[in-house]
Amino acid sequence: MVDSGKWSNQLYGIDGRKYASRSELIVANWLHYSKIEYISHPKLRLQETSKPYRGDFQLPMVANIEVFMFSKDGVKCRTNLPNWSKDYLNNRQKKELYYETEGLPFIAIEAEIYRQHGYKRYLSHIQQEFINLGLELCDPTNFPIEYSQHDLGINWALDDFINYAQTNNIQFLSHFQEKAQDLYNLIKIKGLRKQVRVKLDEIYARKSIAYKEELRPIEDVRADCLRLGIIERSQYEHAHQKGLFPTDTPYSILQSYGMTWFEFINGRKIDDFWAWETAKQFVRSFNFQSKTEFEKHPKTGSDWGFIRKSPTAPSGGYSEWTSWPDFLGNTSPTEQERIKAEIEITNKLINEFKTLDTKASVFYLKKLGLHSTRLLNKTRGRLYEDLQRRPDWIQLRDMLASRIPKVKTISEAIEILLLEKCFYFSDFIAQRESNPNLQRIPKHPDRLGKGIFELVRKAVGLPTHDSKMRSSLS
Image 1 (cartoon, rainbow, N blue to C red):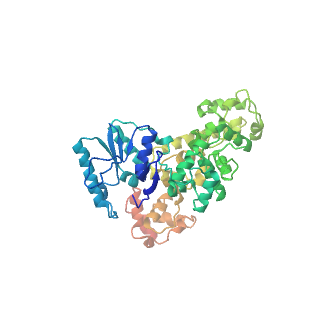
Image 2 (image 1 turned 90 degrees about the vertical axis):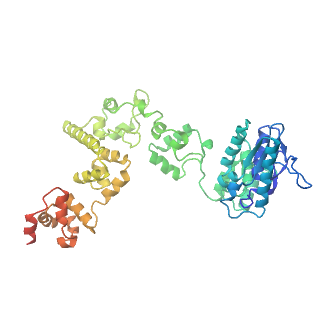
């Protein structure tokens, strides 16, 4: 307790009495705010010298309370015990025996929990000990039970706390918790946490964070987005990083307000909007000839409230989206048939990929010629979005990125040979000159390792004997 700074001769509780340790002070303050009558440091009838022993607290006609600094079990894991530890343990044993002999109920509070596990765990321990005795303590959340009247700052205002912080190299509000816990408690009591934090952020040129209890009304944030023309979450985050919002505007709408981006930007939940086909029918009734006409048209009144504001957006748009001409209804019948066929193919691909593991998915994508995430996004947008939602997406993407490795091992050579369907050495020789991917593989099979093409044939289920390979080598 000495080493951790939780033992001091300068601690005075809310009751004005002096306490030997912060762990003892917490018990005193909690009893005080719980309006439980108690006596501090009562004399015990245990007397071995001219001075009688003293307890820590007594609840008249109820129980005694002892706040023990450490126990026999607790000292086993410590190597730096103070020189008075042995005497302390002897005195603890005498006190416990005294209460047992006298038939006095008592509560044993273990301060080791405070030192080893922190403040919250210590409070939980105290509360449980009182519950075991049928006593109820008040909720400590709204009371400064760690606060000591002796410490500095009892009459301080904002400027005094800031001056103290600068003098003592306290650059964050959290540093008050680490270096001056009593002052932090006092800042909290005085309701100055936000002002101190913002002022320190200004001094050290930092962007101030908005905490949940200090957030702006969500309607004001939505009005700012409307003013700035923000409809996408990525636009919002970019504007936030550039400092275009007041300091009490959160970075994450979902985390701070518990509202999805779609609901935030549209003012309603996604289920409230029309489905894709119904939305298309309504929009096509206006005979828009271009995206520009659609965007310039006033969207107030009528049934416009059921159309998503940004139909193409990745978040908040229509997952069935194909193109503006299709959405507005000015595509040719031939183009409509092509789009319809492409949608059907994409749907089929998505369903097939749902049943494949990572390795099989990568091999399938390669067969389709989709050997990079850029190409996948460009040619199969919906499939790309569906794959991104897979839990193995990162692994799948990285495997695609290494589709054309610099051949250093036999396994890499086999992978490329399989991909290009060069099951025979003669196929490999024939295609190598015109295929830059195959040119990465050495021309002579002995440089790849003995028997590589036998391995390739075996892997794809072909006979291991191949006259074509022998003839090509002769």
